[in-house]
Length: 304
Image 1 (cartoon, helix red, strand yellow):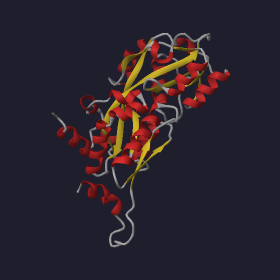
Image 2: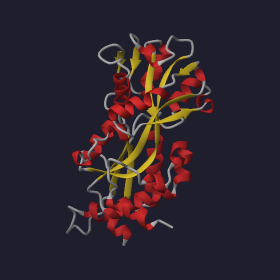
Image 3: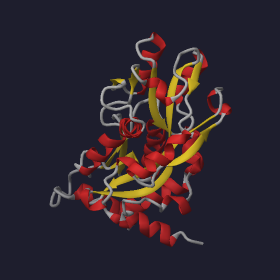
Image 4: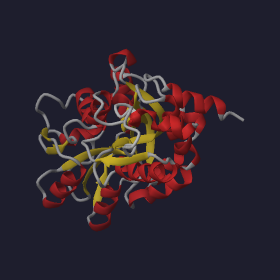
């Protein structure tokens, strides 16, 4: 019965054509850069869905990340996607086509520069060339808000809008002085850079409270310890990440996605350690988005 329910959406439009093969249920997962956490997480989730849900064909879409992912899911151009909480509108009614499956982990804002360079604090970015993240990314949203509360907006920083891979290449080549990137620990692209180039992580911990006052309570302070990248430990600004879903997906399908997301945490964590930080207790906290009814049903039924 469950598999039949999963296949119902795919059968729409082919009723009466009993001799034709059934079309698979397509699940496009909007992620981010190929060297960032969303992509690794999404690839592992797609493999699990393809293996364990007959009649489902899941695939990963490379995007500019959070803001673009919300748009794609809301427009029906993706079924699932990852986003930072601070990208979402403060009132869920502004995006009625998007609901939540789970809070998955926290994104930490990295400000990366060369170890011997002049950038030691956020204020040192004034007048310098800095990548603030790709257009449509969560990094861009958080970085621009940070520059505003630090009074570094209005042209005081020479902004470049580059994704993670291009930011890493530009810093290596000396075309920029620093870059921002928001991701779960460890970010593979940053780790690869730190393995070949002496880099510095800039401490941003003091800016959590100004961001909370200006933009809401989603921001928290988290640490980047020396063990992650081999750099001096710092504190920085973080905010939750959610797995979001099209609101019109069938409850039975979303319930199965939620079940596999929670029950296959060890496999997902093998793809990226950030996935291992999920738990059913934390997953249900998805303010300002409500949970999809299928996800909510699984969390209620799975309580011990």
